[in-house]
Length: 384
Ligand SMILES: Nc1ncnc2c1ncn2[C@@H]1O[C@H](COP(=O)(O)OP(=O)(O)OP(=O)(O)O)[C@@H](O)[C@H]1O
Ligand code: SF4
Ligand SMILES: [Mg+2]
Image (tube, rainbow, N blue to C red; front, top):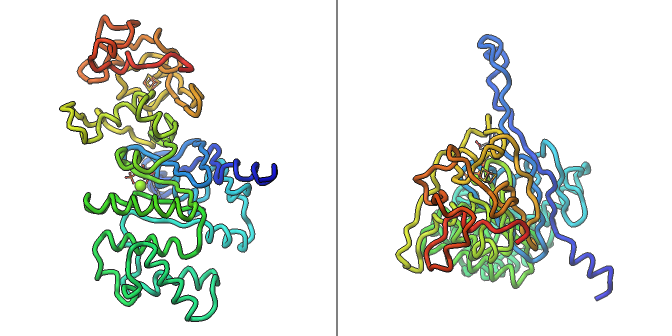
């Protein structure tokens, strides 16, 4: 491969830089004037940076309302960002003015949504649903060629060409998601945005759809932005993971690293919520505390009201996302400071499993003694 080609392959397919999206959720002007209320701006996404490499899956995880779908809509070009840029294959899509450029981008990028039934036109037969992008982008001419390609797409997702004559309501949830995938593939995309693609499905079918998506990725060299609130699903799919909290990334890392060595207290709390598949008997706990209001986010680190390691600086200064190890970025003062970090008494909810046990500060991890180390004990020194 020549140097030019290698450089092109090594550059990420997609780069999000300082991606920001605010929503004006103010009451109408007259109401505001009468009630003397100011405008209300909701920061759904507040300066997010990530790369998606060719042929790989970048997953976004986080609780409901943290901004995952807003990122998906921004990346798909459905929302205009309030600030920041999205570079796709070297082109800034936020600067696309001409219709032709946007049309080409839309052909190369497809979306799969959570609810396959809502995203399929119930009055169209499956054949028409799947072949629509082929016609819209004029990818093939002639009925026969379009029919052949549609049959091939149906087979590619594990359905029969005969299914093309049916309507969406004649299929199960899993089959409908297969139809959505076939439709997404019809425009020969390079990049697929998957927003909770299996959340609405029965657990028994989820694995089949995820395996199909992985198989298609390998066969067609697809890149995915994969959104889920379910870390177990993400573990199965992702090469790289970004954990979002209240519109910002708090940790990004290669998938294995994130699961083997989670650094941010929020990531650790999320990992505690994964069902105990290995039946080790270890207790699983829901993430403690309420998600703050994104219209009025807490000052400093937005996670501090729920964080067992919070200290006074966390309430004053927002931690930036910094590189702490190869491919790992974290936004947490405690992680930056490492073993010398001292949580405030007030800021450390004592009854939470992640709260540091008194008297263990500065000691070496309890891993050696075979017990489950507390969050604080597991915090690695900066750069580890
Ligand atoms: N069009 C909109 N107008 C106003 N607020 C919005 C809009 N879309 C999203 N929001 C708000 O932005 C925040 C992020 O929403 P988003 O849908 O991106 O979250 P999410 O992480 O996808 O959540 P979920 O897991 O529930 O799908 C939420 O507070 C939501 O209420
Ligand atoms: S220790 Fe501080 S900076 Fe780190 S997550 Fe907790 S509150 Fe945020
Ligand atoms: Mg969503």
